[in-house]
Length: 109
Image (cartoon, rainbow, N blue to C red; front, side, top):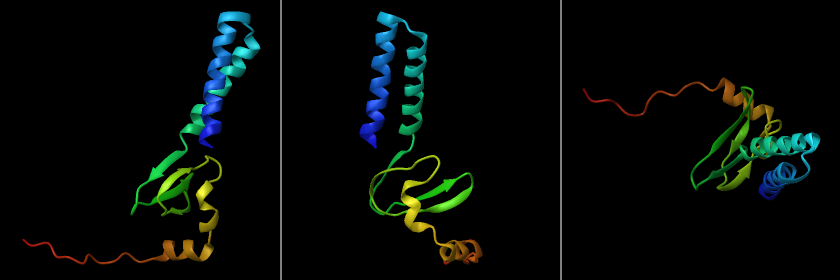
């Protein structure tokens, strides 16, 4: 997905420069600006995780899962890419009904 995003970004930039320098077609300038906007929005979905890190996937306030593997990931804005295996109603019910734990350490005065 990173390659697709970079092609969109540089392709839109090349089309924009070509239209400004040469033809000056308003329709193609609009297409180039649309490609640039789309590329920037899609580039915002990339994230990396180091070992022993995790990321919660939330879309409009709804929990969609947790990514626990280390690596380079892409999360779409409409459907979280890594949440497909984490959509379990039982697991979500446990997370919602879980009681908070008491602290395990005491704070010395």
